[in-house]
Image 1 (cartoon, rainbow, N blue to C red):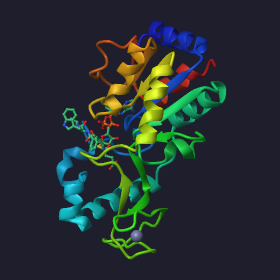
Image 2 (image 1 turned 135 degrees about the horizontal axis):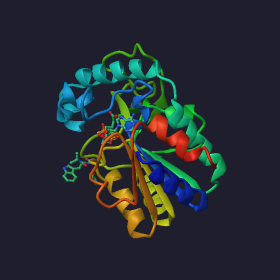
Image 3 (image 1 turned 90 degrees about the vertical axis):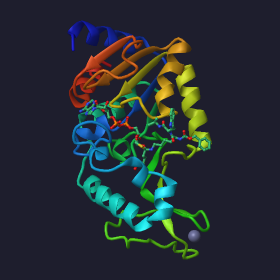
Image 4 (image 1 turned 90 degrees about the horizontal axis):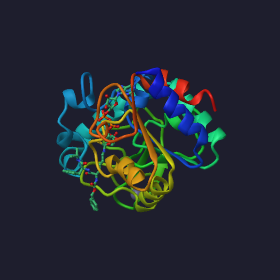
Length: 243
Ligand code: BJW
Ligand code: ZN
């Protein structure tokens, strides 16, 4: 990463009024949460369609729950890293800042972000397929077919799987934040999964200055204003320290 690029990204941020941030799994990687794609990613050993689809859950809920329980156990050991902490600080310095995350691990909230838009859900929430009840449980010893305390129906993780619609209120807020942003920061996402992947382009078309932070080039790299290549836990604190 050139210090010139970092400098430009910093100066534009200092001048920005409305800042929108989109984060992905790379932001939690340094906390020890596995990413999905790439070396060591979750999809290296599993096919997404076997685990992260409603069809997979209908076919074999116990298999899907074993995978989620394993991930919940991993995430329970993880703490926010300097990237999460820096983004929580950004929110305090820029009152009109919206944090959108694809992550389901809850680490932004743990770091002090007040109201992140968790557009892919929350791995600590369960949802009943019978009555729709949603509840929080950090239980790491859930049975393989957890039951709803209200109606006894089968519960699923309250996350968004492939082929499922995102919560429309969240999505509307996210589009709005992208459209209104004068500065958009996209960190630690492969920018492959829709509709989240389209948010940065919406911001750009509406006139925002767009900065990406990633270990490697993404489909956005060709058109963003600045790409900062490196670890989110190194770069975000440096980008945000001057505020
Ligand atoms: C670092 C780093 C460090 C590492 N520092 N960087 C064809 C074309 C277009 C769309 C589709 C299509 N076929 C199917 C679709 C739709 C599909 C989709 O987009 N598929 C694509 C893969 C092709 N999308 C959907 O199905 C969505 N729903 C939908 O479209 O609904 C339509 C609808 C409307 C109305 C009614 C019904 C339906 C839903 C998508 C849900 C995604 N769900 C998951 C699982 C969530 C639950 C869980 O966690 O178990 O969300 S999949 C997974 O991918 C997860 C993530 O949030 C998401 C994005 O991943 P992310 O965050 O980008 O992580 P990685 O691993 O991909 O990348 C990490 C990045 O970090 C890398 O770039 C690294 O380099 C970098 N990095 N360490 C900085 N230290
Ligand atoms: Zn129920």
